[in-house]
Amino acid sequence: MKPTGRSDARSFSLAGRVALVTACSKGIGKACALALARAGADVVLGLREKAAGRALAERIAGMGRQALCVQMDVSNMGEIASGVRAGLDRFERIDILVNNAGIGESNPAERVTEKDFDETIAVNLKGSFFVAQTVGRAMIERRQGTIINIGSQAGFVALPTESVYCMTKAAISHLTKCLALEWARYNVTVNAVAPTFIETPGTRPALADKAFRKWVERSIPLGRIGDPMEVAWPVVFLASPAASLITGATLMIDGGWTLQ
Image 1 (tube, rainbow, N blue to C red):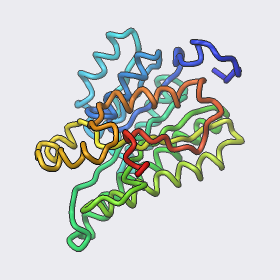
Image 2: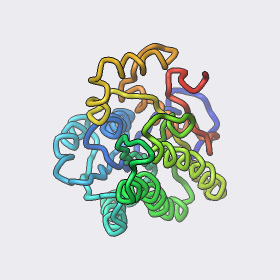
Image 3: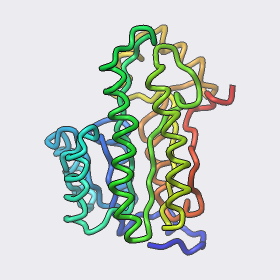
Image 4: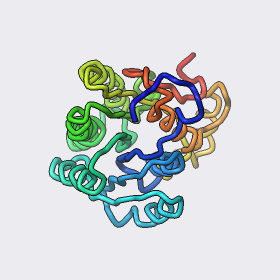
């Protein structure tokens, strides 16, 4: 579906499109997969453990959309290649990529080990780049596509004990600009979103600390922690024809944190 420049309700529909979402068994990735399906897209579910997507695939099928679970640990180059190929074999194209996979254990900088560093880089940065590259090649061939990278407010502000995570998320925002510039001539847009603290299984242990949760809520001008769907729906917008003239941008979904 090529952009028409017209502004109507159809500009927000993803009917007839195919999306790949990485790391989507829970949290933001799961919310994105569901929101994309609700907007009309069929979804390839890229999973570190393929079986973990079975229930999600059933929910998407219940919406009348197709879902395909593929094995895709983004730190594994072979699984990136085979997972993307499985999606292309099933649907013949991938119109939308949501590059969601990310990890980040809290650790003071002076205690970070080489193993910690390498594992975070392998998923957050190397994995994101090579998933984008692999899907991007197919988009370039079709001269059409949309990539949305899941970044973080941590790419714009320093957070204690998060030096490596912050570094990788800052890199994601700049990678977004670089890919957007290179691939614009192929009608491939590349954008990112940068959420604040969101209620997910990954953040639940930290947010269970009442003092930490209170600090987070005080730090967000809107005064509350986000819900995964508050990230997913902006992703749907960026994936839709309504955002056809937007590329290279990082949309802050941070309740105003980075305004301060």
